[in-house]
Amino acid sequence: MANLRYLTAGESHGPGLTVIVEGLPLGVPLGVQDINPDLSRRQGGYGRGGRMKIERDQAIIRSGIRLGETLGSPITLLIENRDWANWVEKMAIEAPQLDIPPVTKPRPGHADLAGMIKYGTGDLRNILERSSARETTARVAVGAIARKFLAELGIRIRSRTARIGSIVDEPGLDHARPEHWPWDDVEASPVRAVTPERADQMMAEIDSARVDGSTLGGVFEVVAWGAPVGLGSHVQWDRKLDARLTQAIVSINAVKGAEIGPAFANAAARGHDVHDEIAIDPDRGWARLSNRAGGFEGGMTNGQPIVVRGALKPISTMRRPLRTVDVATLQPTTAHFERSDVCVVPAAGVIGEAMTALVLADAVLDKFGGDSLPETRDNLQRFRQTYAVGSESA
Ligand SMILES: Cc1cc2nc3c(=O)[nH]c(=O)nc-3n(C[C@H](O)[C@H](O)[C@H](O)COP(=O)(O)O)c2cc1C
Image 1 (cartoon, rainbow, N blue to C red):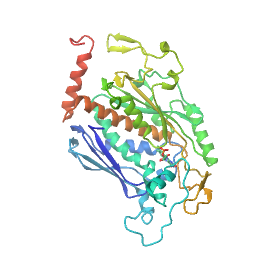
Image 2 (image 1 turned 180 degrees about the vertical axis):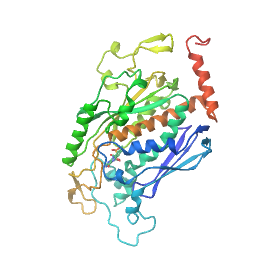
Image 3 (image 1 turned 180 degrees about the horizontal axis):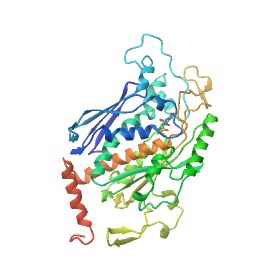
């Protein structure tokens, strides 16, 4: 990320999270009202654990915004951890006065054991505090800023849950027209699914996993529309925007796979059933007769809606714990259990939106630049005119 740079900081049970983002142009209308709704959406979803009942995530803006607009200077956001009040001794900044017992029973599937060996610590808390997905709160906050910038340019991003455990929700939506999908129904659904009956089945499966002391994964889908042709590039592997987007999606905790469009289904089909034929629409200019490429060709956006999916493994902290080895005694035992979620696929979709917004905002700034929003917008509009059907240069 060269144009829009950001860095998050903060431990799961520390005083709070901080993020500094730099590179957004001057003049983007912005306030906490643009950030806090996404923080609430990340906290929700059927299957979350007790922690989210404690937190009321709200961003505090410390720099970079004046009179309701960005200044082009670094924006600093703080989000307090309400749970910190319960952890002041275990997470104290100062050297301890009391004996703080270390966490010594690594959870299979978590960062605990690899982190312990890599960093040479005997207390797994030194690893798990930062590997916790609490960090994604900061990413959602900064992603909301990127989303606002993109919205000013006509680019919209939404997400939905496509699978939880064995329950799949594939309602046959038109991936070429996501602007017409029932997004209000998705937001009203406790699992962020489109089909109510599927949502009920997903919740029943989550209840069953909870009773069993186990957890569930699944698949979320993020769609973005309104992006121009030509973000990213084919000329070098690290300029390919589909690759940068899938990296961003897999960077979300517990996400182990990503696909652009129906990539795995396409792999099983013939070329005639996969590629999106080219046409000219009298109203919209260059058009495709389908959107099975998921909005990318040659590492560039092709003007079609962007479709990316993330596959989550089930959460690794489980009330019915797996076998492990105590790192202090080297004796077999069962894994550490600390209050935990049962299923986070709905929340992961919201984080996926944030990561998509950050990647797209960076790519927009890469192609169109601009120190102020009007300058970026003018550059984008001028470029759109170059490929509008009927324009002199088309
Ligand atoms: C929104 C969200 C919440 C999560 N909550 C938990 C949790 O409560 N317990 C847990 O063990 N893992 C949770 N995870 C997953 C872990 O953070 C993740 O599995 C761990 O950091 C190891 O990284 P990896 O799975 O990406 O390899 C959550 C993930 C997300 C996206």
